[in-house]
Amino acid sequence: MKLTKRQEEIVRILKKQSYSKVDALAKTTYISASSIRRDLQRLENLGIVERDYGGVRLKGNEKKNPPLQVRKNKDRPFKRELAQKASRLIRDGYTVMLDSSTTVSYLVDVLAKFKRITVITNNLETALTCIERGISVYSIGGKSVRGMPVMGGSYAESMLSHISADIVFLSSFGIDENGTVSDPSEEENNMRRLMMRQSKHSVLLLDQTKIGRASTHILCSVRDFDDFITNDDSVSERYLPRQN
Image 1 (tube, rainbow, N blue to C red):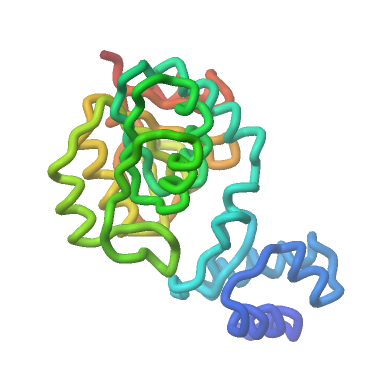
Image 2: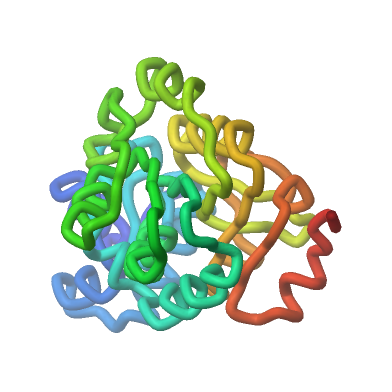
């Protein structure tokens, strides 16, 4: 199907800068954000773009991602609330695995309040924050995933296979109506899957903006987690994770 001139301009911008937030596109093109969203919906339906984290990129362009700071600052109050809820599962002396997600990175400030905590993570920025907070941390080495300070691949998986933890906290792109958890990144999913296997207790953290969303690579069912924490407890109960 033929694109409108406005949609062609959006594609041209994305080819140049790889990723953009909706508000930035609206400002650049002098078009209302609501009109931009309608254009993006059509482009997404045609398989041209992929929307996530409040922005958009050309589909198939996995080398550029929303800057981590943009992702971390998005929905900050929701993520802080999740971290506080998750604190009830942490005990002094725990070894804690944290995945690469910005949602889970909000747990670092919570962990700093406990004694003798050891953190294992494949997110270099999370590891550095742990060091700043005086938390003992193991940083998983490996290959950078999609140009981010996130480690994955065979070397990272090999290192992780020799470590065990009391608890792991994970997040993802979203969960669909059937309780399937998914993410755009195959590499990050592989690491999450192994983290779950190497931990005694697994916890999924998803803020309310991620409910009802789905992406390309399936991680698992929400029922594979020991706990599922969201901002709305009724949502967690609706998905019925397994009971121990």
